[in-house]
Image 1 (cartoon, rainbow, N blue to C red):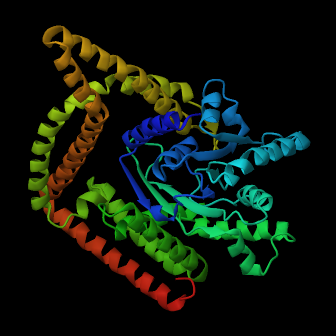
Image 2 (cartoon, rainbow, N blue to C red; image 1 turned 180 degrees about the horizontal axis):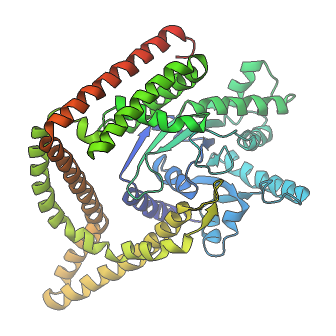
Image 3 (tube, rainbow, N blue to C red; image 1 turned 60 degrees about the horizontal axis):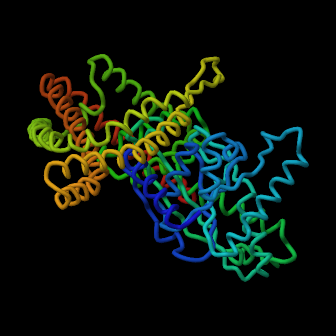
Length: 474
């Protein structure tokens, strides 16, 4: 594939990702090498969407992906993915009765990937091997270290390959216009791993691979929210919302959840009665909210009158800007409807442990995103040509070229502007509604506000106690 075609495809993918996700925060981008071989090792919370983010947001360099064989064997998308540098590997779950064949496939994948690393390219791999909904990092497999070690061995351990841990966190991954945080950790080399255990790279292959994999496990756990017990997830999220502000950055939110995960896990073992007392108080507060028909967003407001007027002004300003942005909404009509029509093709339900079938929305997102990109690739040139013909017929060739060039340059930016203004308008409406509900029942809301502050004080006392009792874990 030519570099220009790859850049064009990456540009389309970047626009699609930014239209699908409301906010993308990138922390530590400077850790991604501008040149030289590197292996990006990421967690895998959201299937193909994770690959789209890594390919479009981290670097302008070409990213080669290591993926399941099933991806490149897809009838329509598989060959396209291969053109963009995807290399298939065999997973044990796919070849349970063909272990020798799977081993041969993986050796071929290493043989395919090593020359790319030797040429100074970037390879990305999802360390867990599978995508999962769990709010914890799964066990990192040894593939990332095996691929890198094979390339280093061919270069007589002078390649200077770097492994770069990448943590991906979504605010609501199955929803359109979710927020995404990408945190990039500090890279390390083969020699960094060798120095940890005083290992000879040529003589201790397995020890190096094991040691490097353990390091990747630690580094990635530090980049994402890692909650060992599933039953604690809901409590940690509610406590995080109690402490934090809705307007805080995603990085601050994740760091807060990481700290609370450590604290809740600690007290769940060390002093479960203290944790249960806090949980009961939180549940009592939630029941009171439900009884009066409030949400926590209504009660947490400090200045509801000011918020009401501010959001009224925001609604007025946003409505005018949305009218201006309607030009972008019209431009994006065809790709938007292509995405909506294609999304159900990826609908797949899977049986859960409780017997209720759940919808796998990840493939819906994949089909919708690809259809939107294809729709834009077809519709935008057609729309541009139609504008050119219309303007040229009425005003002449020079005017036709000028207007068409302006139209083509504003197609995607105007669509993005429309989507952003629509999001702001919805947020202003929700905030105004919450402020109005507070003012209508101010006495009840104020009483609940006092109870909320009491809960916050109890939680902060627990945080201080943890810092004093378990400094080694802080």
